[in-house]
Image 1 (cartoon, rainbow, N blue to C red):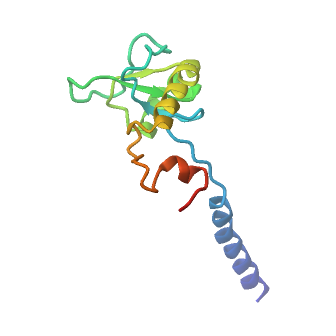
Image 2 (cartoon, rainbow, N blue to C red):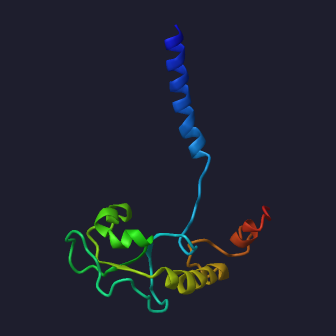
Image 3 (cartoon, rainbow, N blue to C red):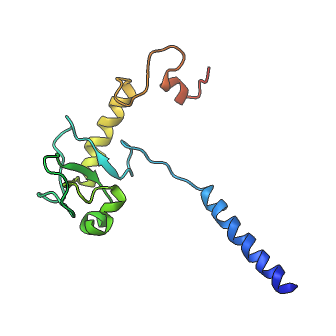
Length: 140
């Protein structure tokens, strides 16, 4: 009887652990410091790169342009191990320097999206659904 009770307690404790872990979350999106993943360099200042040549782990369809990535330092050094995380093993990848991303890309990205020029896919038409007023807490 005590063994069954002990097993039940272990099972319940194990089931409760993931619930506690799911309560903690961090959300970082493109254009914020700490974001890692593909970025669109478009008309941004020329990116400073970690390596002068792109990295590619598997041959992919030819003719596609290379992609630019902002990744943690160890991921670029050991790209073979991490490329699947970014779904980019068959891509030619240039890694941008962290300093360039934070000093050049992030401020410009945030400025463009603060202006409401439609770059972020949200409407900014002042009909009561203005994203900026919603972000300030003015929920009408």
